Length: 253
Ligand code: NAD
Image 1 (cartoon, rainbow, N blue to C red):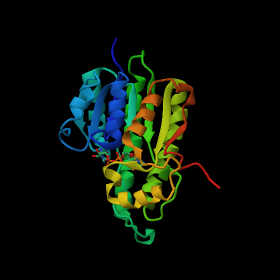
Image 2 (cartoon, rainbow, N blue to C red):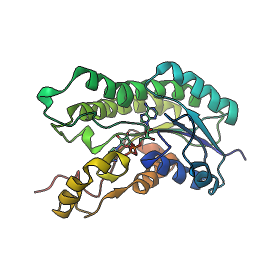
Image 3 (tube, rainbow, N blue to C red):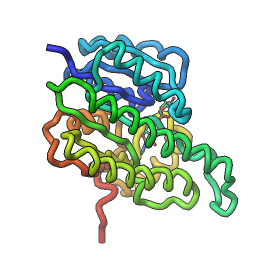
Image 4 (tube, rainbow, N blue to C red):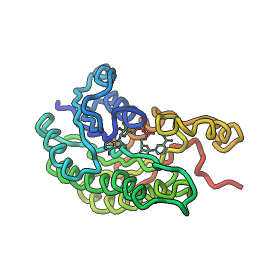
């Protein structure tokens, strides 16, 4: 039987790569879209270890003209599209007083995290709709605890993820009658290149008890949740938000 196909944006490293590896482990073939011209060393081997076919496609998701070629390359290679993981994203270009936030930095982060992700979802949803039946269909979007929690030193990032959260709700309603499960996954403080520069700050906060689970999140924590949602077992939970944050977002007294 043909294997299902998952397209993972920003899958060259970090959380995206962990999602790709978890999905490959669950029987998916994998298409990764990321910025670099060629995939990093070891990525193909990591996916191949799980028996999955793997293709890498260089793509900047903020460039909407690059979306259709990505969809077409996926369909040409695999003949189907069953799952999209919207993972590609960037952090705030500058952390600082929001009174000094620059419009160009605001525009840049929204062009990747929100605008690029919205229109890629739109293009891929159409391809999923026209793909052969036989495997569960899903779109899983990685937002952040910052979709809900404010951080005045990086409001642009928070706004991009809050906006994306609302996109997921709308997409879930549009695609529910089509039997496509649409989910939002909100990682908390997760150890990746994105948090490298602020790791000392988060080490201190975690040590001080900020995260009930008393540890950093790992990319594999998020990968496991994403693969679970893409499995079809949660199809009727479409529109749900899954927090992968060690209890950080639970309101406490
Ligand atoms: P990362 O920087 O390690 O990886 C991000 C990947 O996305 C990279 O491979 C990068 O090249 C790619 N990417 C960036 N811009 C792109 C673009 N325009 N087009 C295509 N690919 C692009 O970061 P990560 O921590 O793995 O983050 C993955 C996702 O998880 C992001 O959406 C991020 O906002 C979210 N997230 C991360 C954390 C955390 O603590 N690390 C917490 C909450 C949410």
